Image 1 (cartoon, rainbow, N blue to C red):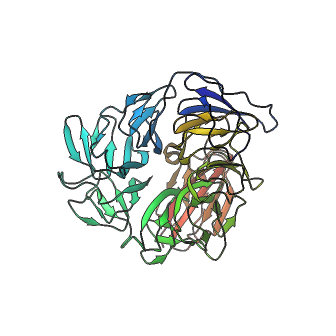
Image 2 (cartoon, rainbow, N blue to C red):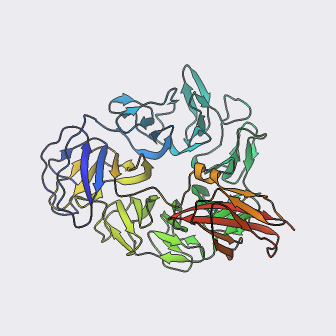
Image 3 (cartoon, helix red, strand yellow):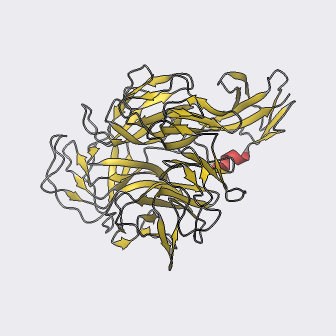
Length: 506
């Protein structure tokens, strides 16, 4: 399934690992924290032992988040060195070497083991950083950022309306970020944002540095329940999908997953109740119109569903992927495969902490013919420059098919298995398609459509009210038979999709 070319230090002959329960060997093939896997067919010849490409010592601590910004991969975590270079938990990778971000903050409270970066996001030419941290040193000054910071390419900014040495952006950890319709949605374990101003929220808020006020609550009371947290967010059908640990959102029974629409408010997902002893949804991915969810929950609603699950807009699907106790990272890399990482040790499967879900055949695949698993927890999976990066807290890959274990530090990359990600459309593609007039009480024009596309209009319940093939690059939607309300326009072409919201007034 994959050939691995090492981006690491010089190799040593290792002892073969013959059983998958054997997680350590007397000698191993030594590598850096980055490995290159090149995909081949399942019928390929046995894979060679990885060879050294460049000298490197990798990352010396856990990776908890990754994102692409300004043409580079940004990596966040609890590490303090990358290839021996001080980096204070935040570093960039350009495909060849590590570097620091100019003006990278120093996390003063580094002695606190709880401090870490939970989430990274590029939006509006800025890099947003969320986590659990307070005082940050930028240059010679020490400031209270309060769990969030914004980098604009020139320097770091505090996300507060009024500077304060005592109060920052939030009063608790920031764990998830998503950008939608000019606003940054922020989720986590907090009840107040812009702390000096004291804006109350329910673990969800929006931030817009171009508006006044910059911070606003999402909904009226937000999320509620026991040990409430918004762990993950993404966009689905042009709305914000929120997952985590909660029982309701503005009183809407949600059970750890809910949709937020700026017009309609919080919308429950039918039959989508995550329950169980722990019951937390921690990661999301969108593929072919379906939501893939993972976490440490034990069942969904009245169905005894474990492991990786998918929601098709009507029901939760029972997938043949019941592996592990805690899914922490998902990535839909093409139409047929979803990469799954986390704490996924043993449990009767020939994978360990990382596997590929085969959508077509509904089964679990090892991520490599040469390696059956990762020695520790996988926290993040991100695509950068056509390659898939897998990172977390581990120190080796476990060899299979006669290949020795390979020891390295916390991150490696996969090349060739996945094409461009599906389901999440970039901002550039969204901006190309225009819908006007909007709001509308008559015919609506959709322009800048790729030829050969299919256009579907659905109501807020997901019912299709209009479907047509697009001739040329423009389409007209007659709304005379539409009731007043919010609709979703979906344009599909060659496996990719763009969603636009339409408001109909009467």
